[in-house]
Image 1 (cartoon, rainbow, N blue to C red):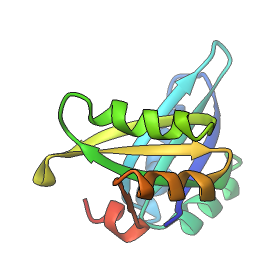
Image 2: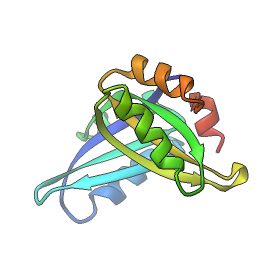
Image 3: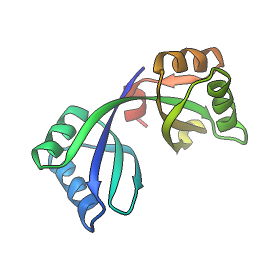
Length: 143
């Protein structure tokens, strides 16, 4: 149920994201989801890709700092309150969210939350008990 995410540390300079995209393209890596958070000096690009090991190695080989981290993908209903339901389950269990991002999957009328959580096992258990679906890596990559 864990999904491999690539975290890329990049300088906040023109052309850096294009460079990363080009490196991944040359390796045949398909990006399924991404998030970018930045400060004045640097950014963290988080990617869900179909070939995480290949992507990480290619970026590191090109002097771009990248690492693989585990995240979970939670499917929630794409309606008012769908997000709130997942957050209440996590909050009630006393679980801290380090960061998250989301995207909508219209074929199934759902939204997918990508979560980096301090206690992934506890979060998965509580979310499943709360009636939510935790997606496997293959499911996220096929969306």
